[in-house]
Length: 310
Image 1: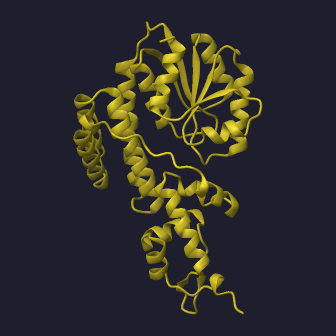
Image 2 (image 1 turned 45 degrees about the horizontal axis):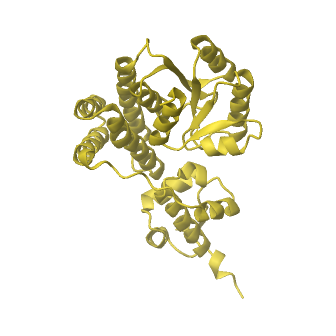
């Protein structure tokens, strides 16, 4: 009996309909991430099997839960299945008094971004900073904007130029925020960075702003920094803790090596915190590291309060 489940027989229109993603997104997932590899007909048209469509449905479900397509497309089938069975961690509900203002700001920022209007994106973020407190802007405008840009880019809905416009606007706005919030006389000190090989810095910048607004003197070192340099800075400023932001998808062995090297170079009394979508992977991969995993900004504030003895 022929294996019809694995037989390539569906055109892209049917594959898109049955998997619940658009044809453009499907092509982008194939081209950028190798999510599936369709066969070709005699006229070079894509043909998908039922197995391809089932895989696409699974990937779409995981993306809807917040996972990066770039990460999950590289996993083995057993790893994808395990991720699918893992409990979901829904986003915390938006505070009611921030809902309308945050939604309006996010919509305006995305509209400006679609038009490649970087100054417009910055103006929207700056207005949001006047309408909300630091935590509100970060949790309900900036972080959702980062997620939206990443998801749209992965889906092929926006191009790399859009991503660069958003990155420039976010970097400028967060940089200004950190300057305003900087408290050089604060008694509590935190060093924030990303490890060598990790170039995504917005999670680190947002965490630095949250810590500054919580009364910490933050030394923000930026992205892609070797462990020895982070340890040197932490020692010199007499940091009460070091926070690393790690995005899932970077080389696991490399990040584990860097995090372990930081642990070895640090004073045992100075805790290391790991935040970001790759934090759990780094902690699981290291038997030698005793790190605090930061789940979200609320957890970060609680961990910082614990350091301060509040």
